[in-house]
Amino acid sequence: MPRRKRAGLPKITVRQVGHRFEKLVALRDVNIEVHAGEFVCLVGPSGCGKTTLLYALAGHLEPSGGRISVDGVDVKGPGPDRLLVFQEPALFPWLTVRQNLVFPLRAHGYSRQEAEARARSLIPLVHLEGFVDALPHQLSGGMRMRVQLGRALALDPAVLLMDEPFAALDAQTRSHMHQLLQGIWLRDRKTVVFVTHDVREALLLGDRVVVMAARPGRVLQDLEVRLPRPRDPDDEALVEMSRRIRDELRQAEEAGAPAPAAQEGDEHEPVAPEGPGPIRPAPGVGAPL
Amino acid sequence: MLADGRLLAAVLRSLSRLVQGYALSVAIGVPLGIAMARSAIVNASVRPVVLGLQALPSICWLPLALLWFGLSEAAILFVVLMGSLLAVAISADDAVAGVDPVLVRAAGTLGIRGMRFHLGVLLPAALPGVLTGLKLGWSFAWRALMAGELLFVAGGLGQLLQAGRELLDAAQVMGVMLAIVAVGVAVDQGLFRFLELRLRRRWGLTEAAA
Image: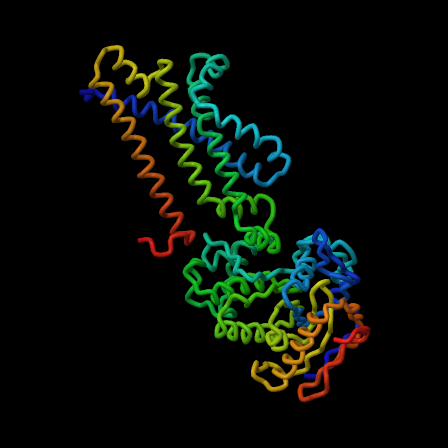
């Protein structure tokens, strides 16, 4: 896929963001820019602050330092332009699938007819035909997740923030969800920030993979993934890349030395699909990985 | 024995009082419980009072009720209200505090706020717990009412019981006691059991229950 232009203002700007929980440094000097229509995966071990960062983007958490802005406006709390998708389905258990989609639409000022129509149009997109009147507890885990995805897409947010949405699913269902999400993304080109601890998943889905390390939570690398879509999880180049990223994560963990955070520039380290060339640290990462 | 309709009239009289007092206590108790769970100020100021007053047997409100409202219908409603209000409020508080935080967060990110959030998300999410409190509140209300009716004559089952004692009619006393039990059990097993089952099924809390 040809590289898309990175010209113009970024959709999301994260500048020198740090966060502490009591004494624990959850995030230190994180700088990331996300452009409109980009699919960015934050990947790293647990404790690297990726979820903290995502919640800060969503406005559910105020970082103790730095600035986060969307379209140049500082994030102060949740907004209709950014929508979180959780690891749990987070559906309203007393509402049917259809009502789960309609209820938030009504809260956003849609009339009953508009909301019903919009919900109806979303159902096929997430393959839930025939289950519109089912209750969440009657559905499988994958279906519940599709309801949540449908509910999020119905509101048509500019930015989707996804917090390990498929981590609790079995491998087969997860792979279906990957296909579904890729399909939807190719269609809508929404800006997506996707948190995962699964490197392979990140490479499968992302235009860019931001590799993070723990203690303190920081950005290790910011990689561009240039593989044709839709991607195959068993693709050799992808498997090879994920192996290298995992190696580097392991080394970073063993070293334990806090490397300076990567500088976010307009040029990301490109990774060619067939390129066996080593993944070099992003500019600014000085310490040996 | 009491086939002349006095029993039925007394049951209806007591029930109508109960319904009024109980409705009032639900109408105040549930919002109060939600407020206690959601607002730090209300929680800090009201909750200790509510917890403390709960140690007071409901009939202890009767003297105060008589001073304030006189020998009136309002006095007995007040006793019923105070008897059940606190249990309802505390259960609602616990239920709301126990709502899955993911649902609250989901509502936040979906832009569901204000009344729509409280009535459309918080209350239904807490409803199984709230219902437990309503059931408890109902039995407290029933007891408070009987005690109130026994102590001052105003019709109803309690008065019928008292009348039986004054007439030295043990059969009437026992008959009325049976009626009190019957009404209590009927509402508890009939109404609340039914509501609970329906609710649990809808909310998906009983996976395999019939």
